[in-house]
Length: 219
Length: 219
DNA sequence: TTATATTTTTAAGCTCGCTTAAATTTATAT
DNA sequence: ATATAAATTTAAGCGAGCTTAAAAATATAA
Ligand SMILES: [Mn+2]
Ligand SMILES: [Mn+2]
Ligand SMILES: [Mn+2]
Ligand SMILES: [Mn+2]
View 1 (cartoon, protein in one colour):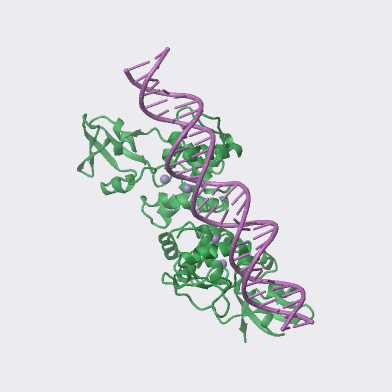
View 2 (cartoon, chains in turn orange, purple, cyan, blue; view 1 turned 135 degrees about the horizontal axis):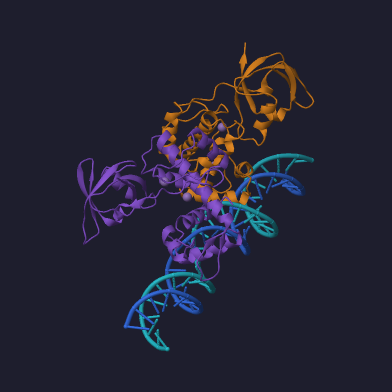
């Protein structure tokens, strides 16, 4: 295929499928920050090319070809992120945007060599699993969003949404990194925000942010 | 700017300037494998954007802005080539095409980090100098094409044209790499080819190929 | 100088990926 | 069930970057 737009559409579709493996054009448009009309247009092309199942006014599915293509894009993206962060020392809140471009410009050969050079990393710098050459990837760990924790529970940060603008740079400021332990001191009813303790400091985190940070309970 | 086509035009212009720092549209078109009409079109845009001096029917010059942009593209390209070859072990006859894409997808920040990681390489895998952050680059060594050598002279390979299709994979087959010593056993008048000795083997090299391999005489 | 060849530009048209505005279909609420 | 809202598609249009064909300018050769 080799087409930046189509590759980004496929990735966005795959990343935002609902529980039944479908997505509506409207959501796709908003994720891609693009008009609904443009989405309709592109869906016809992706359908024509065999990457999505598309019928007017219906939800969209990926074909199996579309799904492997999308997974391979995630693979490229995440391997680049690991390289940029781990090898070049680029901060984790900057690697996503760079990988967003590099993913379209690198052959599978480069990606495979990079993977080997990095010694087969299993997750990207934000905790997302990296598909292997055959599209197999570890299931996301049984993680929960911070908002799902109860008061007085402790948890370890496992994954952070890398898709939400400015989220990473904000949570970096308040000291959250992968592996960090947090403690839920209080849950505030009226706005859904959470009072958490990190490094002995108390911080109030809005529900919008807390819902994008995924953790594993510590017993 | 951030535009693949325009970036490739600028690089092609810079790489093919004549002795007086100019290039004609026709040559540019053939280097880019594109129609003359398309070149005319793009030259208007590059001129509008301040990267080239362009007047109808005249030879093209780069503005100083155009020149720095072009040199920065060469920098990106060549640093990627070094990384791919040296770090990932990709053969030197494959890195050019890959770098041709990566060069458009990487911020200066990535390039600077890569340069540091690679410990400030001075030449790319084909012997071309790498401009530094300020656009300064070593002059090409005082090299000559193999065709300019005389019979019974010895020389060391310093640089190989990385722009000519299939050249690299061919000369790799006959054993030529950077630093290799060659000996001119004979120059054949009628077709301009050269009989050279590499690793004690005699090989006849056409003038077309020999003219793209640059060497330093050994006394 | 004049004829011919080559280069360059102009003109018209194509696909791609987007836009806004209007029409249509589907979903939601009363 | 009906009215209203939201989602989706259609229609028209735009810029980028190409193409081929024709016209115009420049270079080369006789
Ligand atoms: Mn992308
Ligand atoms: Mn990520
Ligand atoms: Mn390029
Ligand atoms: Mn090179």
